[in-house]
Length: 109
Image 1 (cartoon, rainbow, N blue to C red):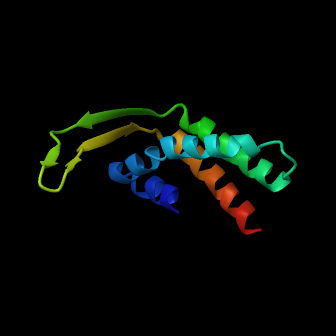
Image 2 (image 1 turned 90 degrees about the vertical axis):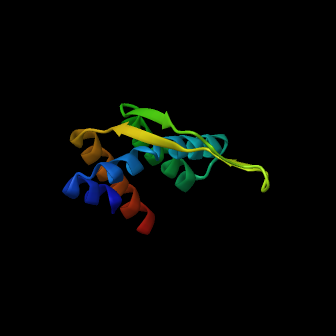
Image 3 (image 1 turned 30 degrees about the vertical axis):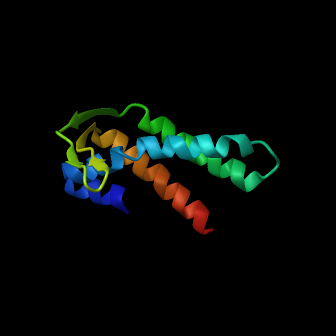
């Protein structure tokens, strides 16, 4: 599990990758929210478990650094270059890791 690897190695690149999951997790919750409370107990439980993890991500501070974009006029596209810097302390990382582990165990069983 990536969170356990981040705890063991304390590599900033891995920790940044975990922190970058804050926005996709919120997007997933927004997609699931209309179905919450509609009688599907498994979906409700999934939503609740993800919401707990999302609440742990709320304390994470993120900054974005943007570099000059790469422009390819002949191919009609632009590559936006950016870097996410995540401020994620060990306590938050350990709590997130524990809840993700709980979620995985629940999904497997």
